[in-house]
Image 1 (cartoon, rainbow, N blue to C red):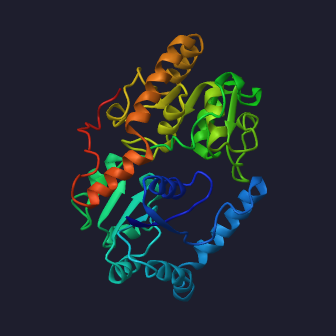
Image 2 (image 1 turned 180 degrees about the vertical axis):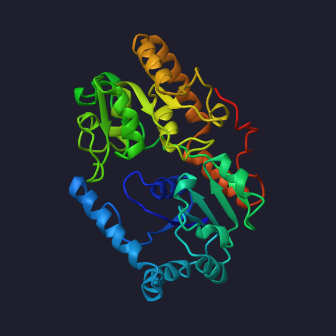
Image 3 (image 1 turned 60 degrees about the vertical axis):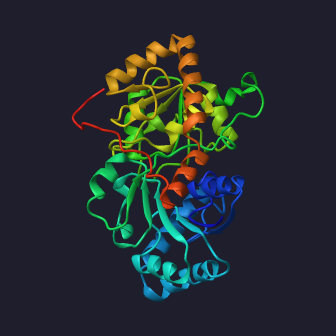
Length: 356
């Protein structure tokens, strides 16, 4: 099939994983990156430059002439050759732009939204004539399915086994990656607040620098001043005894991408409990959830002292992730759903007042 992917193609970007997997599946894939091209400079300074350029773009993109200039290249890509499917990897397009795409091509147009509902912002997709809207949190389908005209589906995130694997043997992992506890991600307020509870432990955090106003010397000393991607991420997660996955409060019923990456890499994962977790992994057998800070600290102490349990659970989690939670699994289901052969992932029957 001829497929156009619209999104950001930086290292480990959601759209990049999608485009590369679709190509691996035998499709002809075109790419279009809206807005400013991200990840051009690299490093901490490059991250700050990207932030500034992003602010400027956001502030000016709503001006009709500037928006028209930004979108001109998209119309050229759309009209280059017949397309079967267009996958929009975030809420980039205005409703009128989706309508314009559908006037210029016979392709089915889908949006796969990789963020939690706290990042809906203007919610362009709510009034756009998509052929399918795919969300990672079953709660989002639960609240939108009877409101929107476009069909709404549940499609959890996943991982890329071609990128998230260790090069070489586990025993060869550099000491730079070895520690008791790790995770990868930015220094946002919620993550910093959680890791402040773990001050004094052997923790290594990987990711871009925090905002300039952030002040937490306890957590700042845990950060390794760089991110980890692809094979380095595998080394970081396998070099740690515990990979702590702190879900953002906006993840209501579902899981983040890190849940699938940690499991697919083969790391031992402690994760915030969510109602939808049990439908994706077996808690206590393929990963371990925690419900509050006291529960987290107890489980950290227990599993640090029980390497055989960590090994058993991490191996089970990796088997599950490889069998069910790769980009190929998700994209096959997305394509089948657009073709009317499937209906996304069934939304689990969740009582939102239940606890683990």
